[in-house]
Image 1 (cartoon, rainbow, N blue to C red):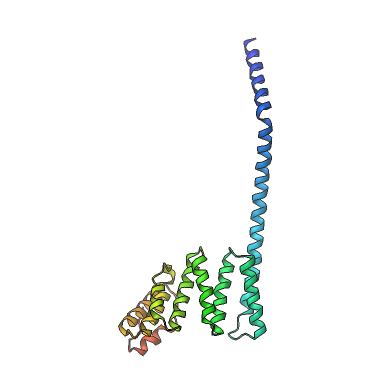
Image 2: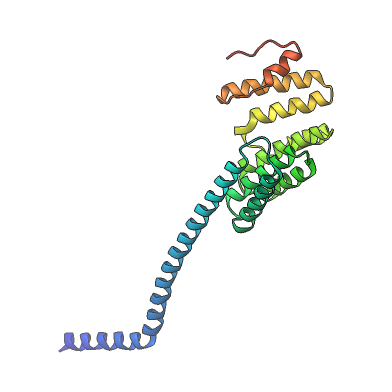
Length: 219
């Protein structure tokens, strides 16, 4: 009888607990299921967005493959860049589209537009490699604009080690623009050494050193 009473008491406790908490448990289970469904739906949406951004970016790359674009091609490319950055602003493809926008602006001789696009990437991107590319290209634009001192300051930004050879190369260009030959030579030699260490081809640097009368750097 004691065992039976104990079981009856336990059953009564369970009934009372369920009466008090059952509704919230069901609601919690429903919300949890909805959360899982919502998360999966969000994941699927994000994957779809990334795929769409990838397709559009590839269209942009194909569209701008030539060195010279007709006016209508340039207009179409800029429209597509605008679509990518507006519809997929938090993706890598939007940042790459902005880098490409800067390249197109340089080709058109619009260095100010190129600078604006690159500054936006450098300040907004969460990806260090992409930011580093933007800093390097901004430095090149400053050299082209006759501001090698500003270029050197840009090269002091947190640029990834993967682009160390390119940074040294641009630094050499900045020093050359300042007519600081020894510093330019050291920077270009460093660029070649880093390129060889990292197994990254770096074209044109040896020609610059040749102009200074420097022997080819060998591995």
